[in-house]
Length: 156
Image (cartoon, rainbow, N blue to C red):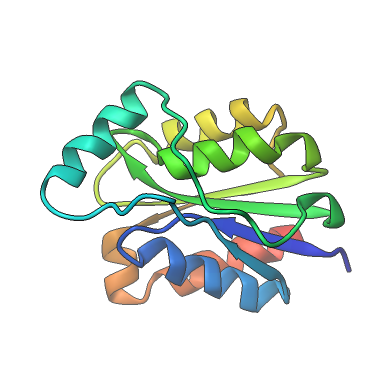
């Protein structure tokens, strides 16, 4: 079995929930991407949209796990304005040279998960071994569990 790292950014906790479920299924290590600056208040929604539309690289805290020590990196992000989150963009830009093989997932409230996943794959410069889109309604209903099981089965 390969050594796997699940690296993700989560603002509301939805992406964290899916990342933890994936990590549990795969017996993977977890790296939560944390921002150096707080993202709170109503202005944060506008800031988030502006950052992703401008492809901004935001400062992130020092990571703990070296991606080059893993055979598979599973990357997760919420979808913001149809794109990957700016903190995950910063992580991928900083670490992508160390990725051996990737798999991608995103959480979304509405639409454009496919677009965000394509953006992630392009930035990584690799085709993902598997992809997963989880809708907010799937998280609330528990339907995400079967989706996670199918996704992780494709990676084993």
